[in-house]
Amino acid sequence: AYSLIPESERGCLHRYIGKCISKHMSNNRVDNVFFLAVDQLNRGKAFIEGDDERIELAMLNLRAGKKAISLATFSASASYLKAGIDALCDSHWEKHYDLSLQLYSLYAEAEYCNGRFDEVGRAAAVVIKHATSFENKLHV
Image (cartoon, rainbow, N blue to C red):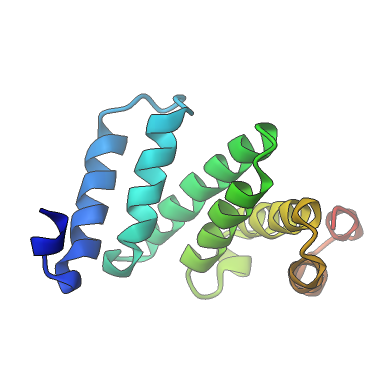
């Protein structure tokens, strides 16, 4: 049935499914259903409307990334955190400093655990460039 849906409409469908799942689950629920909702929303990212929805998606990916780190699934964590970074809007460091700092810092940490040191260097360089305090720069 999925193959019958035109490829140009699949992302919109994924976004819709993700929104339906997340609307009907509790805010503090972090389990397979939560990961499923975030995965669906990420697959529908191209159909996001507005910066508020992009920031909401980035925050969901941060939450998923943190949970994946706590489960020692660093590859999945890096994927969620990278998706969160990719969802950020322009001038995110000015408008959403804490979110940006957490996404980039945890992404560097997850990629360090994955042994992808080139990605660690890229993420750390971004944090060092944009962090406003020495303490924030120390975390990477």
